[in-house]
Image (cartoon, rainbow, N blue to C red):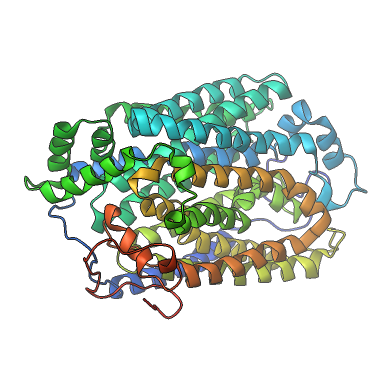
Length: 559
């Protein structure tokens, strides 16, 4: 195990140079250019609200409640960061995946792109997401019938159990069992937390409070990257156990937080607790007059109870846009390539010439950029809106992926063994990876969870969110499973593959996603009824106009 930042990869050439402080600062500053731009346009782009203006304000209690609930993202983020880190640690590979270890350390003839290509290794990473897919369907029923709070508590408990199993793992089957318990916990958390945040937050602040979930994901990811870097230096080769077992900490934070949280007014009404729901609504809105909002929630609940089969109901024509976005947003989010970069960041950096600890430090840098750039969405999302963040984030991601593909292709070719890797060149590749990460972090990262959670009417909300989460987990599993074989086959062209989907999904958002900022969650139907395409499926059932400042409909904002 290398202990110096400048050491070369275990199974390849030892390229001269080291990861300097200057390179680290350069990458972070470059990636944060979007933060300056996003803050400026967010401040200047504030528009008037649309729809009903329910009385109320953003109270301190609501802020604390949403921050605590958003901590559910810690477990997901920690796992994303920790899995790629431990798979780059030699003692972990030697114990559980000796074939990969021998190929990396001893076999100098293997193409650098292919050294980590192992079905068993990819199953270790991706098994979690298969379990999360199944768990999300169970979580849908628990969330609807027993409340969002219990679903979150269940998720934290399952994740904690998985962390304990992995920390004490003795063989690959034990690792897989632990990973699947982690996945079940994530399935429950990802199902319930975004819904909880969207229902608890005042509609004018729903975006930024909901994005707290994504912010927690990035904090969990950054924490995992830092711990991987520290634990990899422990003598004796058992640091990987601390990395895997350390998942207990974010799980306990989430469990304790879930115990202290109140349930949402929507959930209370859904279970027939109207008086308690009214008191809860008065507390979280900070005003006594909540009758109008309460009446709308009761009507939405009554309508939802008339739906006997919410899963089949999703197939009705009037829910066509909701179903499409429940499927396509998580599909495109995973096909952007972001999660595979975060899963396998240390492995990827080792493949392009960084040493063991250098690759882990590079993962720390990208994790820090991911965390800081998410602030752009928090600042801008309720002022500027969802559409423009999607569009500019996608554009930044596409440009970055093309440059990364060209840069790696010129130096590494198809063999992955350059004769020389200048320090500035390696730093440039990391800088553009950081630019890609930043673009995702202020667009598709947080908005991929926010938009689906806010567009579903109550009668299909749990079922639709389950479809959203399960689709996300399905394609996360799929991409995690095929990434290493694709890296071996596509080489640097893998970035072009993901770049193509980034271009497609940016056009998709531009044409088909209406603006949803400042729209009460139970009034969202009118947004679809005024969209140039979706109005053929959804009728405007009210006389309420959203004309105050207008709603961006996409494709010329036709109505």
